[in-house]
Length: 246
Image (cartoon, rainbow, N blue to C red; front, side, top):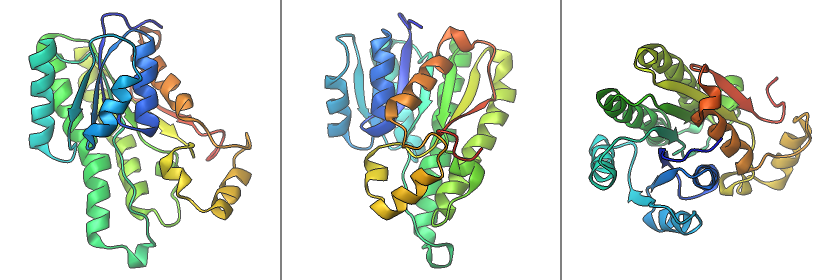
């Protein structure tokens, strides 16, 4: 699935799933733009990539101005739009519905859903203008399909990403731009490390394969969707959850 000559933008690339995506795409010879709110994390990811011409950009996906500046830096360095965009930036602000602060609801929606919209809108617009038949991969979540106690904001944002992906696929297909979603289950990252052990044990008991996933499990799915091997797939939501939610 070589990606030689391809340019890939990965949001949330500073750690976790995003970092794994950057590493896998780089291993397949793509040039990678690593973006994250934390530039130090971006640079740490950058140091783990192959010796191609990669780029680290500090970016807040929930801000249209920040997204615009990010793409300006990309165009300045590479003189073209990315062929591949992976929208992996995401946050959680968990809490029970009846106690959730409005600010926590808004912030999760702004990063997870609005951020996916802003990056896709800007990136797809450049792809269209430059005649690039690209691939956009949005990281949703299995809980966007199933719901999850204590995550009214997060589940709503990820369900929104699934719906947004389907609409974007319908609108952008005529330009040769494919848009798909990946629905991770519970993946071993810093985000899940913060979950109490008792809760994790309960979750694992519900997973048919009997264990948490690894960031690479998601990254390899993103690689498939970014490559020409998935050239007739768009608007799909691929569950990578060990059977959770089936």
